[in-house]
Each structure stands twice: as C-alpha cells, then as structure tokens.
Amino acid sequence: MTALRDFLIASGATEADIERATSEGWLPLLAIDRMLMPDVARYDPVGVAEAAGTSPEVAARVWRALGFPDIPDGVAAFSDRDARALRFAVERLQGTASLSDLEHQVRVVSASLARLAAFEADVVADALDTLRSTNADEESVAMALVEGADWESISGLIDYTHRLLFRAALWRRLARPTVGPTVDVAVGFADITGYTELTEGLDAHDLSDLLAAFERLAYNSAAECNTRIVKTIGDEVMFVGFPRDVARLALTLAERADADPVVPGVRIGVAWGSVLGRDGDYYGPVVNLASRITDRARKGTVLAAEGLQQVLADDPEFSWRSLGSKRLRGIGSTTLYVLRQAQ
Image (cartoon, rainbow, N blue to C red; front, side, top):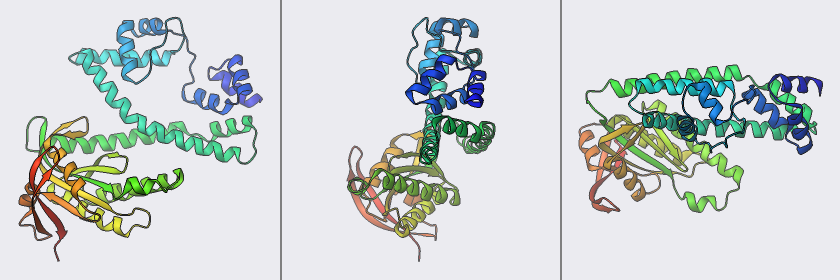
C-alpha cells in the first residue's frame, strides 16, 4: 500500500479518505479521482468566488452552466485549479455582452465534453472489470489504473483533435458566400430500420455493438463524401454538406448498410435550403423537412425533397423518381422523389 498511499497523499487525499475508500471498496475510484484532480479542496462557494475575483452569484451561475448542483456554503469543494478556471471564465466577460453569453458558452462546451467523458468512463469501467477478473486486490487494481493512464498524451490528443475540428468548422462557416447566421446547405437524416422492434431482442452488449457499427459506418462514409455528421441521436444521425456530397453520402450509407453484417439497413431523407447555424448544429424548416421525409422512407431508400431534386436535376450521377405530393406531419403536402444512383 506504500506506493499507492504515497501517490494519494501527494495528490491531495487525506488519511481519512484512504481509510474510507479502502473500507467501502472504492479505492480505485479514489486513485482515479486524485489522478484527474490532484488538488486540495480548500474553498467553499464564497471562498472560490473571492479567490477568482468575482461574486458568489456569478460563480454559482457558471457552476450551474457546467451542469453541477449548488454546493452549500461552508463545504470545501473547490481548489486553486477551480479558482483559476473561474477567474479565466469571468475575465471573458470583459469581451462579451453579458453574463448570459458566458453561461451559454459554458453550457455548449460542457454538453459537448459530457459525451466524451461518458465514453472515457466506459473505457475505465471496462478496464476495471478486466483487472478485477484476474482476482487482483483493490490496491493492485488502483495502482494499475494510475500507472496505465497517460493523461498528458490523452489531453494532447484531445487538444489536437479540437484544433483540427475547429479549423474545419471555421472553413465551413467563413468560406461561404452568404452573410449572417443562415446558410444554404443540404441536410440529411439516416436512421436504423426497425430499430424499436430490433432492440427488444438484443441484450446490452449486442445493442452497443449495433450502435457502434452504425456510427462507424456513418462517420467513415461522411468523411469519404466530404460531408459532416452533425450529431447522433440514438439510432439516427444528422449530416450536412453541399447538395451533391450529401446525395452521394445518402446513397453510400444506404448501400453499405444493406451489406453490413450488423446494421440491418437504414432509411434516409434529404433536403436543401436555408438553415440557421448555431453552436455546431442546424435549425429551421429545412431540417424539420429532412427529418419528416426520413420517417416516410423505406429500408434502403433515399427520399429527397423537391428543392434538392431541382438543384441536382442536371447532375448525371443521379436519377430521380417522383412520388408526387405527400402529406408530412407538421409540414403539409410536399413533393418527394426517390433518389438513386444513375445507371
């Protein structure tokens, strides 16, 4: 226990923390906790606000924007690292219009990182189960997790990926002819056919494999077709790009899903027009239209709105079959086309 105890004490844990974690069976969790946040909690909410040079009210609003509950006064839950981060955030107020702007920025960043954090937690949990399956004691498990982690490299990889994605987003956002918050793009949705019925017969492991295979198929295909996956929503992905690229991705996804041994096929809807871009996502009637069209598509079929068909009507790569006017829930009558690869 000497090496682990030395590490924990040096990382801000107390003897009481170690004894409690040992007796209650969460020693590996304490080790990971101290590895990630190796600072002594010395401030309550009032104290951390003072250390950051702001008011408790502002500090509380930033903390809530991160998605965490209020900490009672008198409870030491914040470290010097927290104070520095809060000071940096508050200093941004000098360059923004209001505290509300800062709260919004914090919420966007926090929500984006929450998914990454959940994935990382699953990886650590799997590693923990594997180590415990070897009948190793909790001290050995905790030390193995600490020694096996390379947080500096992980942080560097996250920073590198962020820079690449930020650069790509800037080119998409700024290298366009339109001015203002709206932009003309093609939007598509693809979801797994019969997902609800399918999941009733799958255990958690098989369901995880299905969703992972679907995401892998979607992201790989999007990269090849010069489009971007905006987000995944359970069994559905949303993607955007130039009209021709989105049409190519839709057909590619449909074909590859039909041939995939895990994904049982997809249905896809695509549309084109002016949308509102905000915080990396897109909103507006065109987005709603693409989503509703997807609901009408059949397995392995790509349905397109009339606007996209008109933009690509002269492109020899595609062929179109009109389905006539169809009534879509919440939208009304819309002319739809089946999009196919030209023979």
